[in-house]
Image (cartoon, rainbow, N blue to C red; front, side, top):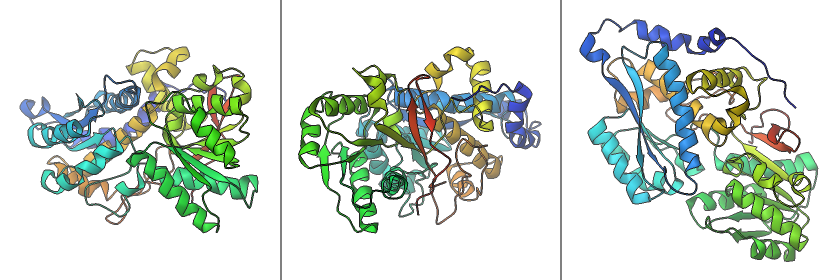
Length: 408
């Protein structure tokens, strides 16, 4: 269990020293310019059953923007996040991207869904706005696309790390591994990655099972996996699905280890722990994700982020988990990277200059929230590093198993 480290607000502010320095260059630009803002946009899901993904991402993004703005803004202007409710509708996501680029003149935009990210691909050259997502499909950055970026490690990297752990960490040289995923771009990412990684070890993927995002019962899926003799299951779904899969696997007697990729830890482990025999079920689960958790208070970047959340969002220490779960940390890091790119893009920044500035970021230090992030003209994914997590049933949080793992 981690011990809480309390640092001063001044220590947290040092995270923004380089941002504040850039501000000093242009504070005298005139009152009219000072009233304008640098805009970013997100085609969000603000009303659906899984809207917490986008809401918490935006919460983290806005927390960092508030830090920048409190330090004086950037190039004489404040930073602002625009949100539109796309309701996980791909057509709406693409429509709002057009609005952001053509009407709002944003510097960069974000999508919630992987399907929306891919649907927007053909438009980016004409809209000339860098695009990233809450979803982190490998195909967004590999092969490199001029306008698409993954800020952190992809779903493929988490699948690779899970399979590597089976072969090298657990030491099972002839494992039976399966994937449970929806029939969408999000789900296909995990299937492709698993098949590719199994080829490295000269073994086949034992089974692939579809579970729709709307499903709340996994009995059919886990019975199929039991019949196939599966011992390890990679889950490319959300936390509620993980809880259902663990529950129903226990019911049918499927004895397996379950690995959840990035979004499988989108909620605190209460969903798993609240199941019958939840503490025992939690021991069968290993999460794999590309950013540190809000409760890893020994990490300097996490400690500074917690200070900012308490101060700027007026949340007491005991309630931080209700704010910073899910994609909050991802949003915070994404805002850090966008602010760094804006600093490099200069006072005449636009989408094209932001794209070029993103490609100039090298070894960007998030102070342990992620591994150092680097981009370039031929590299649009900031890192391949991920962590493996287990559930601490007493503290009811995810805790890391060791440090960063970088799949080759």
